[in-house]
Length: 315
Image: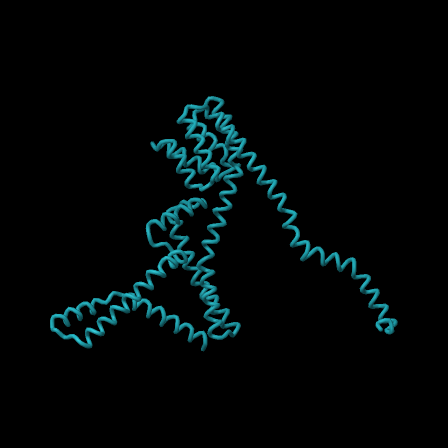
């Protein structure tokens, strides 16, 4: 009965919200008729109160819309563009990627509502607790795709940073052997497809854009914008400045490769230094109790046996 009451209340609430937001053309026609007929008084007071309610409703919707857009789905072109950029940074550039992502949010939100209802029904929660559990499950369902997308973007950025020094070394070899920069980008993109597929894909896209007539600097800027990696932006800036001032591109790429390799080594050393701190939690929770049992267990058993044989020792 509690679950049925919750479902009925949810349907009524949604219906009331939708009904309050629907435009009412009959109100405008009635207002015109009243003005033409000269009927005022009570009707005018009712019209004023209705305008006040409409104003309050529009103000509530205006304040709640930004939060709903961030939580549920984008509605403006700018938000959709940002979502496409995030999906591209995660490596999903298919035309249906945005639709599938938003659909997954809706499906997981509905699944969270159903899971919350089932959990509340199986645990026999009270009405207030059941409503809270359903809202919490629905919110988690809506936010799970965003959390997954953030983790996918972070993982891909880490792979791009890891493969950039090796790629730059191969580019230096290609440029110094006589290849032009466009040919070197194409060659390196093809060669790195097995070792670093993410970076190879980005370089192939930049090469195809340059072959389609887009200026090389703009194609490289697009690659930096897609990846959203600071190291890639720095590399693009170095290449553009080297071409602008006429300096050696091979020397600039070699210096950039040395800098990125040093950063990668420092990041590895930083992770190694954090290992000792991260090991404290499993040491305290799992290893130290086991050591205590192994070392102190025989002594405790001996004491218990001695107390069993001579109870007077307990006094």
